[in-house]
Image (cartoon, rainbow, N blue to C red; front, top):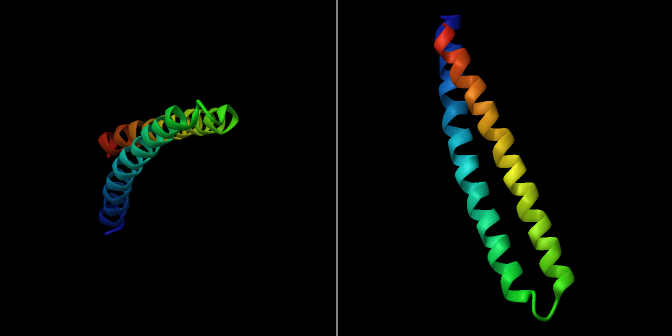
Length: 77
């Protein structure tokens, strides 16, 4: 019974990680798009949006690494 509960948690987290990665990627794209729009009249805001996009990409990378670890552990039991 313990194994079934663990499998449910792993399956749920896998779905959440997929969702979070897609969601973050959309935000990253939006940040970059808005940075392009405001760059000509507010370069500082554009730079902050670009910085946020870079950080969002890093978060997505961390989430993808977590997903890979999860899938490896899933294959072990």
